[in-house]
Length: 264
Image (cartoon, rainbow, N blue to C red; front, side, top):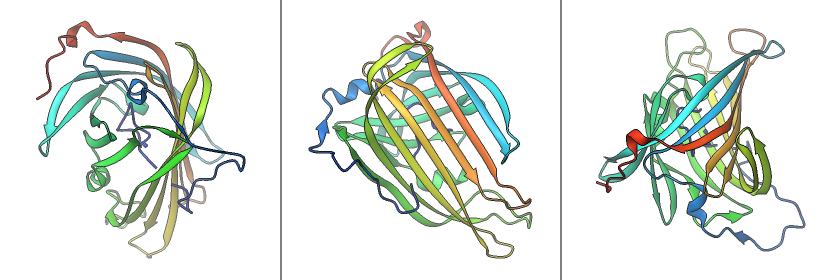
């Protein structure tokens, strides 16, 4: 899920073994009815989130509050495909961005963001949810090797190389409480990503992880997510950890974008 890609976003994401574990007493799969209602994308819909970022070297954590407003602002075409545009004012406290999604009977596919990262551009498009949503279930998003990590972590003026593995798991339904209210039977989705980074200076490998847990409510969409990213020690003796939380404060229709034009 990085969080350039908001709203559906969970971008993403895989345990080292790339397998999901479920309780041993789980029986038949539950197919969620009216799946699309958990992921609304009508133009003009707007969500306001209250967030907090905790980051720093392990054992030295700073906390920062922020607000993010997400709006379905229109549609566009990317590589001949119709996509919806979600504009976020401050996702994950990283500043404004636009994200692009395609929703069809098979699910939701992520087509990237603007501004995006060099690493993200090597991965998109990829699927982030499958319809109908079955509980429990999981699928692998991607397994890519030899990617340009897009940054120099060891200070030798060369970008590192990364292998990326990611999977999404639908964990179940549960009641979730956020500032906007209480939402029973919210779908809980967990996205896990493993980044195996090869340092160009000494060719040593370092493992980073990104885990995002998100809750989606019927008729509302994303009501809460928690994303935790851990990177191993590289330039110091302590690794870095970042944890981002956003909770829904309100949902409304933005009058400036509520004309509901047809798709391209």
